[in-house]
Amino acid sequence: MANNLGILGYDYVEFYVGSAKMCAYWHAKSMGLKITAYSGSESGVKGKVSYLIEGDNLRIVVTSAVDPSEFKISSFVQKHGDGVKRWALKVKDVEYAFDTAVKNGAVPVSTYKKIEDKNGYIEEAAVKLYDDAEIVFSKRDNYKGQFKPYFIEPIQHINIEAHKTGLKEIDHIVGNVRINEMDFWVNYLNKTLNFETFLEFGMGDISTKYSALLSKVVRSKEADIKNPINEPYEGLKKSQIEEYIDEYLGSGIQHIAISTDNIIETIANMKKNGVDFLEPPDSYYEMLRKENIDITEDIADLQENGILCDHTESKGYLLQLFTKPIGDRPTFFYEIIQRRNGAEGFGQGNFQALFESIEKDQIQRGNFDRD
Image 1 (tube, rainbow, N blue to C red):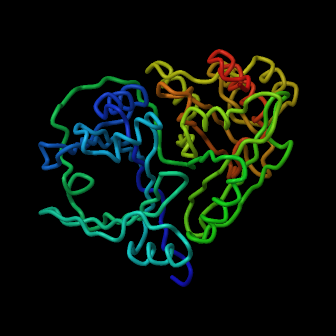
Image 2 (image 1 turned 180 degrees about the vertical axis):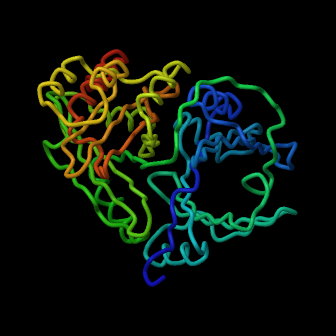
């Protein structure tokens, strides 16, 4: 594998939350996903519970502490609120990937381990990301049970009725970091995981009249792994990145983008399921019509569902929309995305409308002015 780590793709993301049962229900009901596995005292695990929620090729784990001695979970939630603790990468060889990353400067969190039961075994190891998040190297090829050892079929067979959303898989995962931390984490991922910098947005590229940010996108050379990293940039008002860091109490994972093959149907059904989305101004769609863009979708359908369209890509175009924060704090949210005709970007042509929508919500929360 030479200098490559044998990365095959995203495997799963895991949230630490206040109530795993309630969070699992929200994902099943609001996002149209299925609760497929459970881990807790009934499966031989004490002190914590986890639920696996799945879509097409999408796996989300939500975990909460039920015992104060599970300090890693309870302290994380107390500090950050509900948030992403780790994201996992499927790799060919966990030991090789971990050892190579650490040799290249990654900070080890959990060394190689094989976890097994009667259904086989899985292999995992983890390295540090941002303040207290993790990247997990994962291989589950030799396991035939429910996701991992100590996971079983859900013990509560509740029929959760939801409109189908067609959510497919993780497109990218975005991190927010403090001022002057972006380049550190870009270099960290490039060096330790053999990533490369794909896109850069500098001063003035991502800004409104009042706020701004800087961003770089790193990606794997081996698989379709893409990870933008944002940091605040000085503006007249508090930027969305500053708000996140203030509310999350540190650097962390801001949002996860999930792909779909029909974003109009996906967004319409997610709204029927109760999901709140940002609302672009009508002037945005008036501008799209004047530009006479060549897209498959009807702009009236995009406007009805609040979907943004970036046709400034070098090839293809991108459709996207962002949920409002899904928890009590204005921190983590989801992005729904559809890439048309090989589009590779992240919606630069939509930044102005998107951030103005975010600023409108910041004003309502009273978090737009600096103290």
